[in-house]
Every structure is written in C-alpha cells, then in structure tokens.
Length: 170
Figure 1 (cartoon, rainbow, N blue to C red):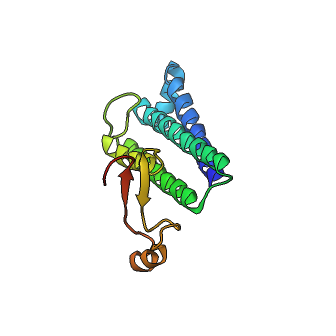
Figure 2: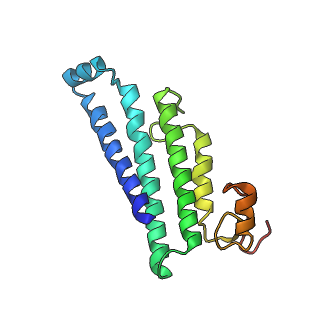
Figure 3: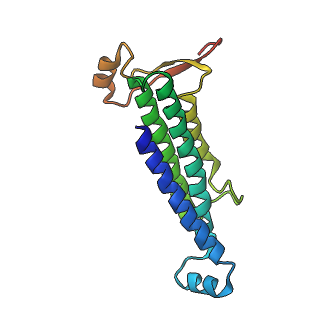
C-alpha cells in the first residue's frame, strides 16, 4: 500500500519536473515561440507544474506517514491499510479535479495555490483520517469495526461514519 502511494507520488514528481521544464523554456524566446506553436502556452504549462508539485508533496507525505506507522507497530493493520487507501482516494480525486480545472483554465490566480479551494476538502479529509488527535474513527467501512460485515452488505462498500476528537465529543 505504501509503495503504491510512493509510486504515485514519484509519478507526480516526474510530471511536475516536465511541467517545470516546459515553463522554464518559455524564458528562451525561440523555445517559447516553438512551444506556443505546439499549443503549449505558458498559462497552460505552468499550472501543470504547480499542480503536480502540490500532489508530489502531499503524496510523498502520505507515504512517509504510513511507512512510519507500519514500522512502529510491526506492519500496517487492516484499518491502517484502509485509511491509507482512503488517503490515496482523497489525494488522487483532488489531484484529478485540480488537473482538469487547470486544463480548463479555472484557477485561483495565485502562483503555487493554483487550484480552486474546494479541492482542499478531500485533502483535509484524508489527513483527518490519520490525525493523532482523532481518538476514534467510528466507521463501519473499516474491517476492525464490529459491524463491518453488516455495513458492507447494507451500504455496498460505501458506508458512513464519524470521528471523535481526543478529550472532546463528536
């Protein structure tokens, strides 16, 4: 699970480097004219770079967190693997949305915060799933939940749940 996450993050790094290289070439007049002729204008390639830099950082951080969790407890539990998959789905879903909106020209206009703020929601949800201040995740979709089988049958793998903060209430 962690290696798959790291591979996805490294793929984002490669795309970030490609987008960055194409962006840098726009500072060379002859190369800029050539790239513009191919339809690779600076406003189109720059968001590719910034999007995949953001996704590389997030994806690599997720891989490091779950690698550390696995080393601390003698491997990842079924719940850890489920949370890592949830993290990955949040990350890939937000990344796909960010990339599509960037290609469509929908941006916030800021250099390294190119994506519309709505995509912060799945990124935040992924982090909350593994946050140490979340004392308990009451999510029937996780295999260690006592009603997991019932929820799987009733909710067809979608499920629902709630979190409880340490020292607080729902």
